[in-house]
Length: 162
Ligand code: GDP
Ligand code: MG
Image (cartoon, rainbow, N blue to C red; front, side, top):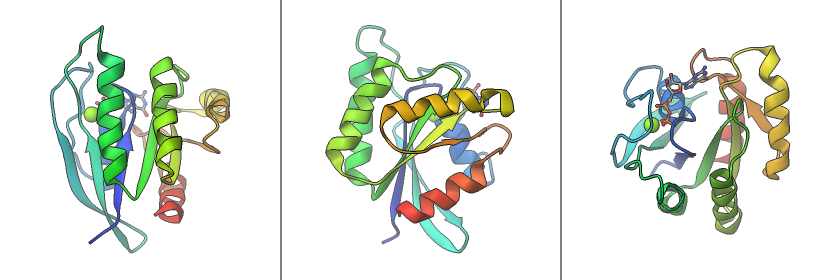
């Protein structure tokens, strides 16, 4: 079986946009607002001759009281099934309590993690990405999933982790 790469992170950080960027086509559903109910969706993917299965942890119903629990629950299942994980954070927002919950799950899993600092659309946001060193997951890879900036370097790091 192909190695499985799970994309995890809070709603609206750009996971599905990143999935589409990696696939080179629009297959994952991108939403302006969090809250679309979708299960995990798997896609066959390839980079530099390495094939892998890409899992978009699609969504959860928005529930203000329970959203942290739902994010953590979704992430936990996806992490357990994955060989490696891309943890996506919105660099323009910075890390939140929910992000820190997911970091704890990632640590406990022992799985290789690549940290994607997304929404770094230009050089001005590089400092936002650097602030994510504070998560303790190693190097934050600055990426604009929307425009493609940095995604080649991210994919190279992903192949190293797989
Ligand atoms: P998901 O909920 O994590 O899957 O996030 P989506 O991929 O659905 O994206 C949520 C919103 O963020 C959409 O409006 C995207 O267009 C936007 N978005 C995603 N990636 C980027 C990015 O790199 N830069 C900017 N500016 N917006 C982005
Ligand atoms: Mg999504």
